[in-house]
Image (cartoon, protein in one colour):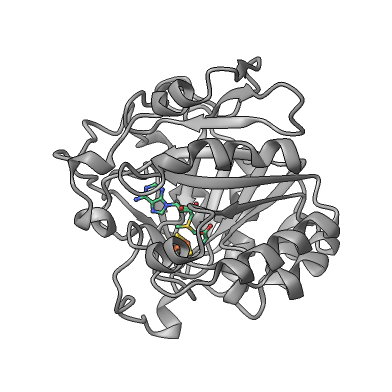
Length: 317
Ligand code: SAM
Ligand code: SF4
């Protein structure tokens, strides 16, 4: 479906749970979030119906995210059912990777083609600090399981944080020399969870290019990332700049939260509920939400915080 600004909306991101086995400092509070009643959350059946309704409006790509999607015990079945929906050409998962040793194979079998793993540092102590409870060793086990499982594409997502991992830009980028993966640096977004970070943490993607002068631009591939490649690399370096150079004009996505709210824009508190609706009802609400999608997310920086009204684990990134 085409929105008011001529953008073709073809990508749905579903946060299948807002719970997580980590507590990344920029994402969610240390104490977790108030667990909602089971009846308030979308059931697997409702998620599948929502995707059927979205597919009938032209959605062809679905990303399963969270919270941590892999802690959901029916995650494989959710992915399989969504990948079998007519019109859905691509199902991808974004995960912290910790549970991939058990789940990478079943996810590939269920039709998941691409996986994005979050990795902010190569230092075990810093990994423990930023995730408040994760182990880098466990991450690498998950990463290796993903490499072996046969996903069509693997990407590593790094949130770029001044004073935390800007000293590791080279080491992280050079993972593309060793592995057939893309490494994507994402600017820190001023969400509710990132309040503890001062202005110095919000650094622009251009810092990566200053550090990696030998990286050469790769032609635009319709993703939100600006792509570069190191000589001899097996994967690309991607730069995602929601803060310093927004890409709202090309935004083709809508989001569905675990409690059934469609968010036409990540940084707006406007939400449209699908909970309890029939396929036809969901379709109508989706149309309304797509037509209400704003042209841009408004000012966003260390001073102008996101107006999302939720923590990132409740939206899905
Ligand atoms: N738990 C999974 C994971 O970490 O990959 C999926 C959910 S997580 C909310 C999705 C993505 O959002 C992750 O790559 C995470 O780094 C990113 N994210 C969370 N908070 C962010 C923030 N304030 N700024 C930029 N990216 C953020
Ligand atoms: Fe959990 Fe992902 Fe948020 Fe980290 S970024 S707390 S892994 S949802």
